Picture 1 (tube, each protein chain N blue to C red):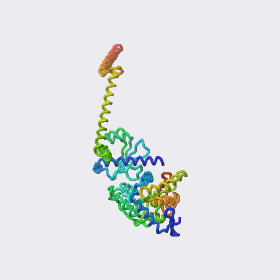
Picture 2: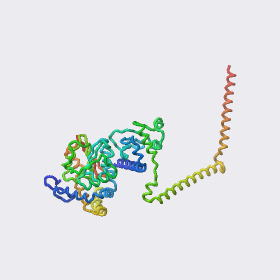
Picture 3: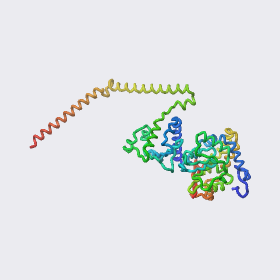
Picture 4: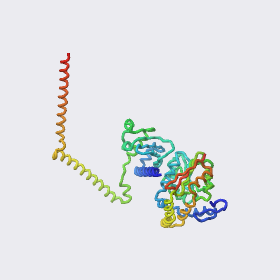
Length: 206
Length: 251
């Protein structure tokens, strides 16, 4: 029973997530008319069971389904993530990362739908905190994120300088270019000698 | 069991006249209808959602099917079925208790589930539907409260299409002694107190605990379904048998 319960819990969690997204997206989902009434079967290589997405008024997530399936998809989780991020489907299919049976357009419109949703954290939080504090919280969060990124960028630059200038562990970019130029020269010289040797050999041989 | 010949039946641990049981059960559900959902979540720690979700998956509902959600109460299963059978399908939410039916209808309408759901107040023992009408019948936590369970099962068999299936989700007998002890302690000591706190109605929840104990165990119910004419009857225990899902087909 244990794995069965895990499966059910996972399906329930996905369904909740999709429902929240749907609520966020307003009527985006209703606009994806061609999806309605369709059934996707997604088999992730990491999971032992398939996931069925039934596009009803609310998207239903099941682990078993006996009806007809419109799109059947076989991929690993990272590929699927790239699909939701809008990667080129035909390219993925060509690389054999994605096995697809059924209508490609349906998958594309689902991927488009997922990409179109921008999750707005402020909306659900504001219901509990009120508008003012939420705005404060979100903008502070954004500032903190900006500051953290800036610190990260500075640290990286600083470490680079330290390695190149101070301890001379790594070469300076100009040194590297100079080295590559020397390498090119060396390659050209070697080729010239090679040719010269070949010529001389031809002369020796009658 | 005492129902049938002696014209008396059990109401929890009490013995009452058979024709009174329906009214007594009705009394219980009239009094809990308004807070039924919240009580379900609190009492089962939300596990009832698992049980129902599993039932939905086993049902194999698909677009165009006709589904009867018997004793559907506040419509948890109906909502799911409504999504799965689509516009071409049909879901009938039937309950003997009009309070529960009203709560269910209001809830579903508020969630925008209207087009393929209809509501019928019906007694499971004499279902007001034509023969061979439904693809799936579910009765979740309802069979326990029916006075004549055999008649109810026969009636369900009648309205089911050949090839259709019946799913009975009902409390049953825990499989291990420890679980049984914990479960007894919980349902006889804790539950009525919780009922008192939340719905100010300890008696109804005492009835709940007692009626669960009086309900036939897994194998007895399986035999009852076979006797009523169902085939390929099997059951799955959930949460160590506190709840069992029985499945039977009509061919």
